[in-house]
Every structure is written in structure tokens, then in C-alpha cells.
Length: 93
Image (cartoon, rainbow, N blue to C red):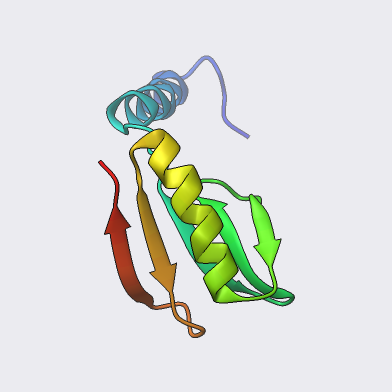
């Protein structure tokens, strides 16, 4: 356990805080929609999100819905193959 009376403790803490602040402020939030494989078919996941937006039985349905969402946000649709690699990208910006 670190001793708060040591300078190294405060230096390390300051580095961690600055890293968090600058990481969040320099990264612009996007609304890109990823169409990804899912155990129940295909899912839409907003870029940077952990949770799925929706799950669909076919890739075509997932793409159709992702396009609607992307148009609303002037974002991109990134379509993945079954193995997770990117197949196509459609831009609405």
C-alpha cells in the first residue's frame, strides 16, 4: 500500500487524474452504429457502448435499422462479417 506522505503517491495520482481528464476531453463522441454478429442473429451496437441497441434475426434487418439510427445522427454504419472483421462502411455525415 502506498504511503500518502510520499511524493511518488501524489505524482502517480496526478498522472492518473490527468489521463482520465484528457482522455475524455480529447475523444469526440461519435454515434457510429456497428452491425455485429450475435448469438441470436445480428445486433446493433453504438460505438463505444457496451450494451446492444437492438438484436435482429437477420443481418439485413439489423443494417436497415442501423441506417435509420445513423441518419438521425449523421454518423456511419459499420457492418461486420460473421468473424467480426469489417465488411463495409456506410457514411451519413
